[in-house]
Image 1 (tube, each protein chain N blue to C red):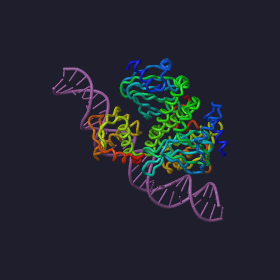
Image 2 (cartoon, chains in turn blue, orange, red, brown):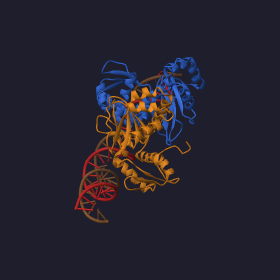
Image 3 (tube, chains in turn orange, green, purple, cyan):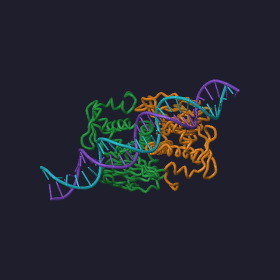
Image 4 (spheres, helix red, strand yellow):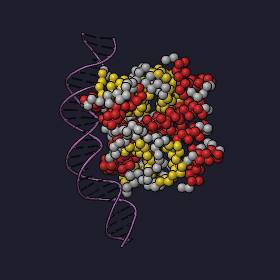
Length: 232
Length: 232
DNA sequence: CGAGCAGTTGACAACTATCAAGATTGGTGG
DNA sequence: CCACCAATCTTGATAGTTGTCAACTGCTCG
């Protein structure tokens, strides 16, 4: 993706309410453009918190502690703004699931510019709160759900984001590997594989190739995920 | 806590950069004052997202799905601003750990007022991002840590917030029950009890009464929690 | 078409939940 | 001030779910 398109995309999404072209120039002035290929880690010093705008592609935000275990904290897609904290109790890094183009900002510089424009601050607020809510949902998943429930929940979440298909059923493409799914759900790849297998046996889904899944019965999946009835 | 003091506290914390007394009046105009006693659920309709400012006390934010299992998503204390989403895949409620006084806002009204003052928006941004980062840490805990690690991590987190004591050791008061700890860590009360027992046996902590814990060796606890070395 | 990696399946072990007693705690009332 | 009571917490035995290790299968891409 061209830097110019990246800038336009950023302006359309984050600065949408601001017609000021000068603002965009200022933001681009403190941004670093980064491209990353499949499974490539985005190089970030972790001294300072960052904001990353995803102009194109899909990414995972990964945390790891002392031992080798990794936890995917969130997936982020085109037009998302990702907040990455400095290294603390755990270290975070951003990694591309597919070819990505993004803008990297130091958080304090970014906020210094944003402070001048209430519309931008409002946008950041809105996105931060949405991210917080999604993160809480993940917390519930990891704290109180079985492997089966996590898997069902995960499929429904992907379906909601980019699924296509008729009512009640849905075909979807998983841009991430089994390992990524496992690291996101706090499981192992073997367990993920087994859960998918059992959902297949039950006739709730079927798969073709590594990354295509068909959901046959969304209502049953919701029940398997232990979610509240749909009227909420 | 008197409504007047509650208002002052809110102004000092959330409106701190704004000397405008009129702003406070406007916020109080859309707020509902709520008091709650120990283990009392804060009555909120869950039709609309809310903001709650905790003027006094300690609270837990709890989620539950279809089945009875509950997950404490976060603890919130004096001067915190809590964002509560509308009922969706899971239902959330706020519950007092001790006597509490708070201000409840409908989120859209709150944001409408905040939009007028960049300083307030900035404060909300800052707090939302901090909440997001804490939530991510919890995600890591629940996704990739053993019961022992969660327990150690939890004790360290409480110590960081309100611990008092000499360097290397620390005495702290747990305002929440074993059940609350379990619901926060995604464990059962029995497991929490056992983990505390084993930490005691190892000589890393000792307890007196139900809610007082002494941390003897913070460095070892950090190691037990599988956190990165302290230079971060 | 074949090499190599991603994914699947199986056997077993480990950790945590569950179920069931007991033991403390802290408050209440005599 | 002490004894007692109910709730909370601890401890023990057992079972279930998921992790671990290992072998095997089947995609993809050169």
